[in-house]
Image (tube, rainbow, N blue to C red; front, side):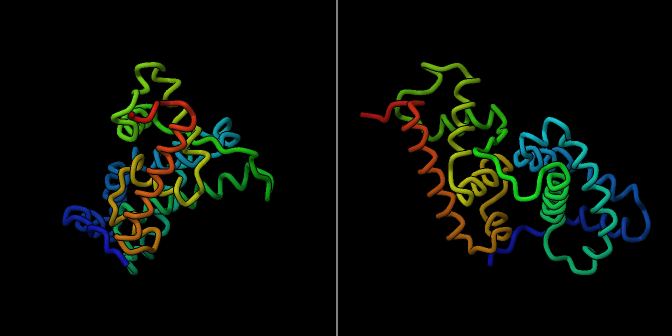
Length: 210
């Protein structure tokens, strides 16, 4: 299995301060990752829940979860602190969504609230060499089509795209979180990109090069 980059020396010092009873040290560490965690939550929040719950509220609850479980984390050190916080935020999101949604109920479709800027960058990368989206569509429509195409992908493809292209995780980190070796994680990401590109072409977002 892949081994992600370990915590920095500064992070380890802050964790030791927190373990010694300094809550400000933990708050400072958490603040460094707050925007990242909010993105992790926002990317996966069900549209029905988003109408009632702000992602920042979920992150705030995740902060409390992480603080309560910090001693267990320090005793076991199962993964780097940033990835542990990410998993904690995802677990909290699942609990929040279970509170707000009927058990077993599923959407007919899935909405993925991708950031517009990242969506446009991804579209430009995948469709380079063909007729570019910006030649025919405005930014909002291009981003919407990317969101729809990502939402229609199989779950495994969608998840690896979110992790690599929107969360900004490295291939090593993705491999570790998914329990894969790095080569397999890289191949999965490449396959997902190819499927997304084809979906964009099939949806008329751009024309393939001649």
